[in-house]
Image (cartoon, rainbow, N blue to C red; front, side, top):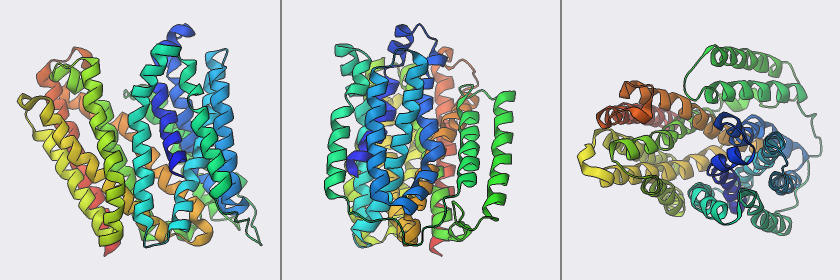
Length: 443
């Protein structure tokens, strides 16, 4: 399970560093090469809930193995891609495999760990995901320089084969339920189309909303209405209405989306602030930004033990309070403090995020009915992904508004510092909103 989480995160982060090389290899623009990243994210986001439910119906072990095998085969297809279009299709298939791996990891964790060790296992999964995020740029850069862009995808094959072997050997057999209901095909199509429209609305235009973005948001809203209307009429819906009435799930997913939006701000704002306001070169900025994922990876296991020892609800609140404090420090720290004034608050923010993730995951999965752990795991993963795609657009727009500039590359240091303040004051507000949601859940 831990290796699956590492691979899914690595599949996202390792490809980013290869975009310039892909553009040169295929004589493509940045916008065209960007579909190599978008195809993966869109497939993973739009299908994760449906695959979680399919695991509940067909057997989680079977679908987990199929997901890892799909990821391996798609990685090989990416490495062999003769064109950019082929590569984008192969990346979508890779995202499909990653969605199956991510959707079922939390379900297996809740099933195998038990309530007394759930936080520890959630912390381990979060640590491995953060490690994949941190490892991707550095490993990708080394592979790219030494062997070329195809090595970015070939490098995923050995750990993928190891994950497949370990899953085959150690995951419990578990079968499909005796009286298996029919899979909700209509709900699956409507939900996937809705999520795809929303994700495209948030990612196209690179933070500058136009009529296409508004039209896609309208389609997403209409799709959501049609989805819930269809779910109310079928005997075995994709998402049981009772699940969404469960406050632990509803508020836990809402808080998860909010904090993921905040964390995406560090990836969107960080490069501009570190380079433009603090004067770091690309290597120095990358090293400073890697402090966050490294801190999250190191804090994951201790965070899980704290959640098991002191209670998931209490530790989730403590993690959110640390996130709000970290955001406030990032917003208020003067640029005169230099890189230290950026890294120290970032460590507070990411350590709080690691604690919240471990505690919130344990609390949500503990409240999930045994026969619906796959779909609940998918919903929890979905809320994180939606927060990330929303944060890339919304927090980028806040940063540009605070800086008072559309061309951030040409903005003066004072403007970038003002954008930094606006972004992380907004982040502190979102963290407080998540804290109130979790406090309401505990009440």
